[in-house]
Picture 1 (cartoon, helix red, strand yellow):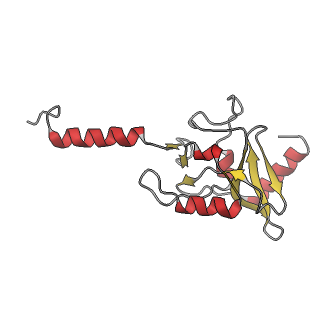
Picture 2: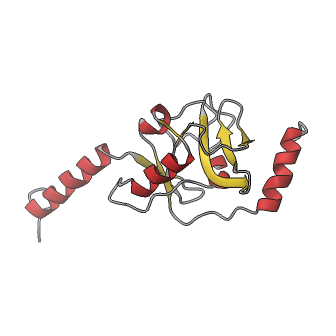
Picture 3: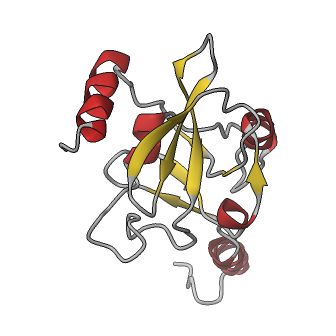
Length: 162
């Protein structure tokens, strides 16, 4: 029988795991099974839409390189209005700023959806390709976004009803 307390292979793997755990810059949402970037970059660096897409596409974190910009529904899944910063408690680094999504309300005039966590709701910005936003990348199976349902939801918010 091998004593794991003295087994070099076990101890090396344990040390490697502890190092990875300390360097972890992401969280996994147990409700959606999405893995979210969670580091200082998520609220300290602002990017326009193309810059945000490129940043997520090129991100290598946690041993993964398949990060992407979240759609509007995925981004909204992080909202928790019972918290001080209106963000799900799994998120360590958050701001009350505006985060860009990959969702367009109208692709012709580039009306881009973003979410403002100060007053957690979506906004569309016409010609929003050059506006600068905070970016939080995601990986995992993309959550389906029913655009018609989303549009109805948005109209209710504009009319003051949730």
